[in-house]
Amino acid sequence: MLLDRIERENDVKKLRAEELEELAAEIRQFLIEKISMTGGHLASNLGVVELTIAMHRVFQLPEDKMIWDVGHQSYTHKILTGRRAGFDDLRKYGGMSGFPKRKESACDAFDTGHSSTSISAGLGYVQARDLLGQDYSVLSVIGDGAMTGGMAYEALNNAARIKTNFIIILNDNEMSISENVGGMSDYLARLRTADIYTGLKKGVTNTLHRIPVAGDSIIEQIRRTKNSIKQLVVPGMLFEDMGITYLGPIPGHDIAMLCRALREAKKVEGPVLLHVLTQKGKGYEPAEQEPARFHGTGPFDIETGKPVGTKKKDTYTDVFSKVICDIGKRNPRVAVITAAMADGTGLSEFQRRFPKRFFDVGIAEGHAVTFAAGLAAGGMKPVFAVYSSFLQRGYDQIIHDVGLQNLPVVFAVDRAGLVGSDGETHQGIFDLSYLGSIPNMTVMSPKNRWELADMLRFAVDYEGPIALRYPRGTAYDGCEEFRSPIRYGKSEVIYEEESIAIVSVGHMFEEALKTRRLIKETGYNCSLVNARFVKPIDSEMIEELAKRHSLIVTIEENVLCGGFGEQVTEYVSAQGLPVKVLNLALPDDYIEHGSVDVLRREVLLDAPSMMKRIVTAYILACSKRAEKDI
Ligand SMILES: Cc1ncc(C[n+]2csc(CCOP(=O)(O)OP(=O)(O)O)c2C)c(N)n1
Ligand SMILES: CC(=O)[C@@H](O)[C@H](O)COP(=O)(O)O
Ligand SMILES: [Mg+2]
Image (cartoon, rainbow, N blue to C red):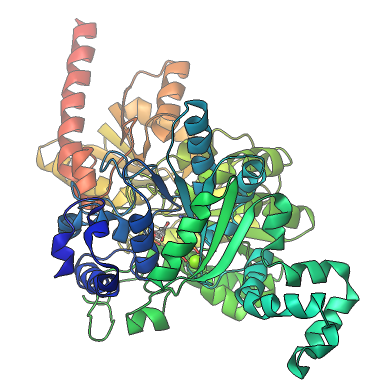
């Protein structure tokens, strides 16, 4: 196997040029086999095998800096930098990350996970290099999907003024996770056929009328506007006009051609954009046919491409998907928005049924928030379905454009809490803090699938900014009997006893139920309350609990800082209530990849750990009280 000769970075340079195609085939086979067992991002990785080989042939690691936008396509880079063995534990706790990580390898120049950051980070490297008088190449690899994100344009605008080499590789596979959207995507599609234009260039400058008949309509178009002549004559004119040299389009599965283009790019004094055309899922038929399904996949059967394992119950996303369609059917003012995550957020069905009221804005969460605010100001009822960690991108917009004007925008915050194998960048563990701090914002979280449905209906009827947060994965379908109507700012008492009172937030209810059971087994009484609202907190309920309990315990899957628990503690302290409070939440830290169950054990938010922490705190609270009485 050629792969056996790749033990560390730069080893790929030792292979003969004629061997590289075979190496690409081996890498594809390896990726398919490994990801079929562990799950991971398959389609994007299959698409960049040749591009990555070419980059590693032409550039020197770790001296040269390769920055992978999003980073979900960095698997071949990991293989070529000696991390092949890591694929056995890909995205498992303690195992190799699915994204580039500086702490994992000196060859990973920059951590990524969220989209459209690579040009900014690359430009930073370039400026640092020049200021420090160093000499290395910087390559930012950005996909056509990531090119729909505003940061990419801010960075290009900034990069245009530099006079030293900076290589931007636009990996264009005509796909975001789903089909790519928007004007840039259309523009790139036109560039893809730029060889026609290159042929035309001569024709235009010499004799327009000698161009074959097939070109007639194009010639007509050229005559019509001067601008379109420029567009057709110089492919990549948009970039060129900005001061960025455009090279392309380059066939992205031809290693020799890619190497040549990269060597050319290295010579340019200034920013240069290489437009590389690749195919998502290349080399594995099921992924070529269904690139969106194989973007991020669980384990699958290689032969058929079908997922392995039993059919799971509905996820929270499935529930959201059904209910929002039902709401959309009844209420023509409801419009939904996604930032390139129609499948992930469960909006694809809404798109199919109500295409005019469905908006995919590209990977542009900040824009999506303000766009939603505009829709609301114009009389619509926008529902922005978005992953918790990606909504971090829209923080100012939520304050400035939604909160300040008290506009009725619904935020359906999916992937809230621990998400598992995507790790640090994707854990949705800050939303209660960042949403809870915004005036006019209401924040809810459901305990089970029925409450998600009820809360979504409540949110759509509510006349102000409102968010509901729910996690990745199977929707809890227990406790259906507890389904009292949602009342603004009111919690729900599930079990009423004395001594200890647990108040749990959203999906942590299931774990809180188990914890209560364990506490009862140790002989203590324990009440259980479902918070329902994180903002405003149900202060009346806290006052009531303080009368009959020595300890109030809050449970949430959010960082402690700024979360639900801190609000309760602050209220109890401000009111001087005679009760101790224990906040069980996530630490002030980033939480790595791994299964949610393992991660919860690590952060002591699993039922057995919580039971121990609660009983210990209760005994302490009682002894303090006894001391006081003496
Ligand atoms: C801020 C942010 N929003 C959404 C995502 C989810 N996401 C991951 S990859 C991806 C599509 C990227 O498309 P592209 O850059 O073309 O890469 P490809 O998968 O086609 O290789 C999206 C939307 C993200 N990582 N970051
Ligand atoms: C790379 C990326 O950001 C997404 O592909 C993400 O991995 C999707 O995660 P879900 O599986 O939770 O939809
Ligand atoms: Mg793409």
